[in-house]
Length: 169
Length: 168
Image (cartoon, rainbow over all chains, first blue to last red):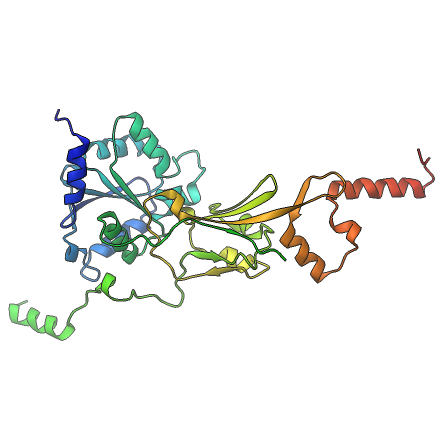
């Protein structure tokens, strides 16, 4: 197997700006986010303006569009799919379920979000190079486009951590 | 269909593609985006926390403070918190460009100071909630800084004295 050095990965990440190929990975979502992904691919939103193209195999993909709260049944397949992806691995986590588990955040049959999956991936020796979380239930096609541009480093991140003390008196 | 016919339809319809990042998105009046909590109005009563379906809103007491945390990454944008808020501190905005590279960037917190029971010293309600309650229904000062447990004990003691129990 070919060894990948961190220098090469950094180079590849810098090179990825245009014409990324995406693979749509559903890990047990309710299909709302998946329909929005299809929406973003239609001529109405037309992500091919940015060269984004849907491919049928993770081996051809630069980015994985990840939806769903990772059900127990899908977990081994999800790990296999992400493992099959070439480095650098970019993942766009879509929807509340993918990020924090959504309304299935503490159900016995799901992992409850990408954070736990990332730990499992690390245990299996699968490294993920860049992750962008796109909240929404379901995500708007515009939000997917925005998240994609953020993943490619073309727009600035808007949301940041806020901590305010409630007013006194 | 012949090419001429397709061309005619295409010319009649024109461009349908939205140039989204370069033009404003199509947002309907019914669209619900991320929720915004106004820290100057919030009491920290926890009504939104009870009603939130995916526990995106949490109220965690820690020491002298209670933190109301809003995690957009788990929010399902139902707007029930805004409906139930007695202080009208929660507002449903039209914000949807919430993408972030880390989970910490998706959290917003409002920190409340906790008032303490004047007898046992246990943390009771948030100071903001106490202020609001006193404003709407003036209670004697000796009451509002006493926790329910101490109140019960005090009431039991007073009732026993009334019934003729010994003072020792």
